Image (tube, rainbow, N blue to C red; front, top):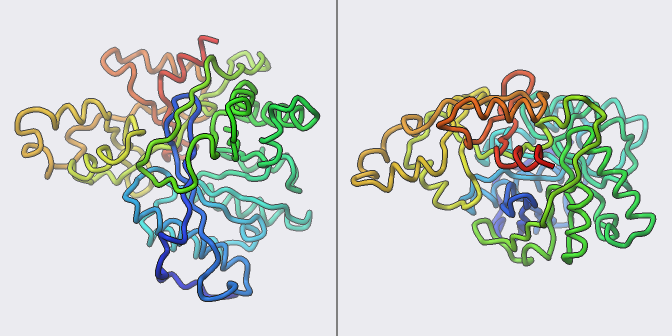
Length: 378
């Protein structure tokens, strides 16, 4: 096994491509995907797993150089995940050194794997989830991987195969396959990400099928960088509601978006810097060392405190928690209608974001109350 060199190479930022993950419900950027090319020192190490880890870590470093706290999306091959905790520990350590905590990273597992590796892949996915990472699966529709792995892995998102996504508006058999895959994903409470969106017809068709997240040249130019605007195309109407296969309706997990998180002991000035740099976050979740939500910072109220007389002098050096609120927590498994009712119990904070937690209380993401209202009204 090759030893991972965690030193940042020269020109990492120039060697990285950034692509936003755009929420079609609001037109905002909810995460940033990084892609890093081969090592400039040669064709790359003989060990593909070491190359996977190198690219992921360099991508995290490159994004750190862009001064953004939006969640990071990286891609790792299924065969690398199957190698077990040794490789995953190196990945975790490299991301930690790049300033990324697990709940801020979506690890998208891509590529097929032999049936003999199924148990190892499932174990690797389980390890990632236990560490707090959001898990995704890529190449849905063409990759050789059993669909029931999606059930076992409880992914945050699934990424359609790019070619299938391009044919979504064609009306042919591939479009029917896309519709079936999106239906399966929605039944599992998993977001669908459509890459390579090139035109508005394709975007509208994907959204009508229930696709929530998208990437592609229609939304951003190739040289896009974090902090720059995206072409915010919010399709009219909304995705279809799932049929009444369950009396309680859709789960809150269908509406979860990645959260922007920070340690619970950060200063108000540090939070202000993030909110001044990023336009998308409606809130920031302050978490403890175990990734459990301790406070939520509402964007509007926080900035209002700084806009008053002597606001910066009064608050900048103090803990951000002074200007934060108790998080409104909902488990990922609850029905969306129950989450909406919970939001309405506090009249003063009825539109504050809800914080979605996993089975052991860690932050999985946030839900915007406006999304719940739109979803429940259809």
